[in-house]
Image 1 (cartoon, rainbow, N blue to C red):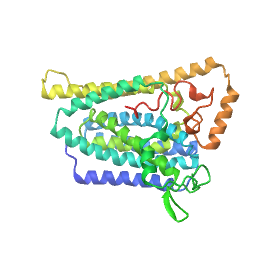
Image 2 (cartoon, rainbow, N blue to C red):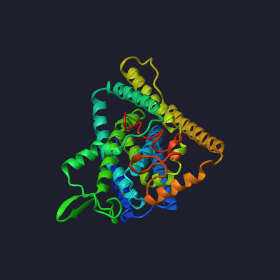
Image 3 (tube, helix red, strand yellow):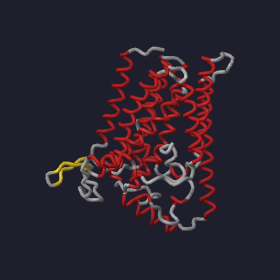
Image 4 (cartoon, one colour):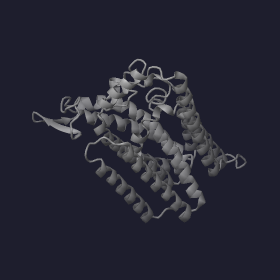
Length: 376
C-alpha cells in the first residue's frame, strides 16, 4: 500500500512535535519522580495505541495488525535496551538530575539512525529479495547470542570505541563541574581557561549513541520480518522509542526482576528470523512453502512476552522469599549510597559491584540482561 506524501509529512511533523515536547520537558536538570515517569509513559503508550487504532480504521486490519505486532517487538527490544542504559549511567556515575537529558539524546539519536536504516532496508529489500534470508540468519544469530551471553558480566563502557574517538579528537574537560565533571546545568560543552571542549556528560551521550547504532542493526531486520511497509516500520519504531526516557525511570526498579526477558526476546527474534526465510522461500522458491500470517506473529509475540514476564516475576519473588531477607541492611546501605550518587543501586561506579549487592543476583541490570545485544 502506497502512503501519500501528505500522510508521511503529517506523521513526521506529529512525531517531531512529541520530541519537541520531550526536549522542552527535560530542559532543566531535575530528578524524575515515579509519578512524572508514570504520567508520561502512559501518555506515550496511549498515543501509540490511538495511532494503531487509526491505522485499523483507515488502512485496514492487516496494516493495523502489522503495526501492533511491530510496536510490541520494538517496545520489548527497547526495554532490553534499558538494561544497557542502566549499566552506562551507573558506570559513568551520572547524577539522577542529568540522566533524563542523556536518555533524551539517546532517543533522538535512535530515531535518526533507525530512519536511515529503514530507508536503506526498504530500498535493499525492493531490489534484492534474498536479503530476507540474510536478515533471517542475522536474527537467528542474534537470538543465539542472547541465550549464550545470558548471565555474563557487562563489559566496561569506559573502553567503548566512542569514548576513545572523542578523547582522541576533542578536548575533554574532566573537572568542568561539581560532581565528577557533571555541571549543574548539564551542558555537553564547556570553555575552560579560554579553551573549548566537551564535558564528561558528552562522553556518556556518545556511548549511548554508539549503543543505539548497534541496537538498530537487529531491531530493523526484526520489524521488517513483521511488515515490509516502510510507513508502518517507521511509525512502529518511532512510537516504541518515544517515551523511552520516561519508561526508564518507571521501570528502573523492576529491571532486575525481568530475569527471563532475554530468553523471550531470543525466541521472538528466532521466530521472526524463520518467518523471513520462509517468506523468501514462499515467494521465490515455491508457493507450496507456507507463509507465516501476521496474526500468528502478533499472537506469538504477545504470548511470549506475557509468559516471560510472568515467569520472571514469579522467579524473583520465589528467590526473595527463599532469601528470607538476609543481608537487608547491607542492601539498604548500597541502595542509599547509589541513590545519593545518582546511579542504579545494582551498579557501582566504574561498573564494580559491592559484594553481596543485588547486582550479584541473577537478572540485575547489567548482569544477566545487559551487554548481550551490544556484543552481538
